[in-house]
Length: 270
Image (cartoon, rainbow, N blue to C red; front, side):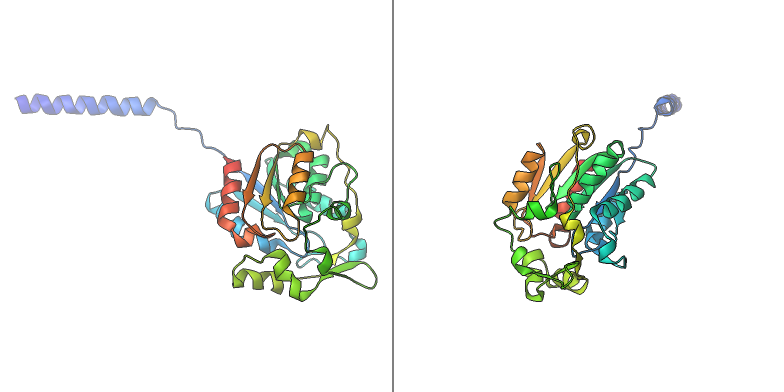
């Protein structure tokens, strides 16, 4: 009899517990972040693949934009401007149903700045990775001229028509990815293309009403031989960026230290 009563009591307790659980609403799901990644000069979407893979493993959506005249895009260099780059990224963002975290590397920093000025309401966070960050009216060329530690300028070889810029083959790895694995260095060298020159000269217009309202972050690349750390710090300070990160990396952290860069981006998504 005691055994029967004990069993009855246990069943009653279990039923009450199940009823209580059924009253609890499931925790709301946090929607995945949409990242839009923009590569820099002399490169293409391939550089973002290790980071893209890590972000997607955490169920985020990743859009990697191929700038005109880079990768497989054969737009002639005389037809390219910074605005053409901007428009390609703007179109990619407008095609997404949600607002995005926009990330630019190197030259891509000029591009994402112009994008943020154009569609600030579509960008939740703007992230610069070893990137050029212009003030109003500045071009990449003007910013690069103030970089006393960069090794890039001495390695450049302009084409006869001044429409493209090459890098001396022996300087490509030392300037871009001196700390990368042999496989990563070969990836950069094997995918190399001459860079369209006109967008380097195009100034960016930014206003407090548009660009100024976007939440900004800077990821410094402390071992950078292309965009010197001191220039990076000056640009971030001039833009009023208070939240910065620093990676002990060359100019290509997505290939040299992809896990570390991915962790920074994942932290921003949280």
